[in-house]
Length: 248
Image (tube, rainbow, N blue to C red; front, side, top):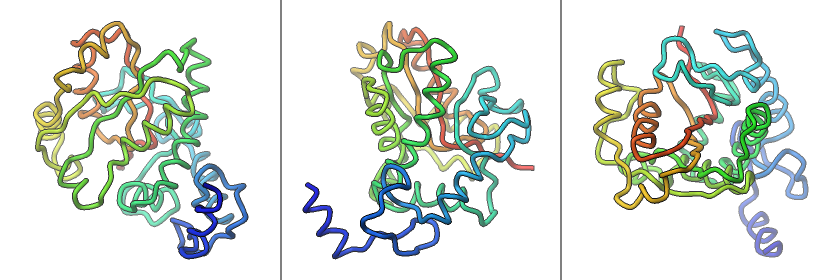
């Protein structure tokens, strides 16, 4: 496996997913996945320390979901506060995570997110290895366009680190891209576009669920997923997201 990886790196030299700079093949100190150069890694760490606009806590320690979201009653461990249309490292990473089919990206982000999740679990007395990890699937059109589901990759890698039980519990049926919809439309779209898998109930009842997502804005999709999980008998549902969108 190491030989194959070395040959692959020689034929296709790894590049930083943020700036495109070639990465030293032998250098593995910048986190799982080896996808950032030293400068971008420093910028990434700085971004995690930027204050949440609502609670003023560093983003990687923040648990708030925002007063105007559908998740305001939930604690949400995360890494970043994301502001659209700003050319910075965190935005480039969000873009890469969604649109570049490179497994290293989600491996790296999941490793970073695991630190926030495990800290939260310790404080709340949650045992992650006893939880079922799942995600809300990407729209089929987006999977066809980009060739992967970043939610699946994030949840699978996060589950592996936390030694939990990974399950694909939802199916996606149509639906529009949430970012192009208004608040009322997002809620309706979220309710109509996700369903539990026909055989999911037996994997949910009596379980504690960790619902993983890459990014939330109004939180309507996650709120809809939580409702479905609780109706199916989940004892508790915990959230974990890479970033929360904040628009002034």
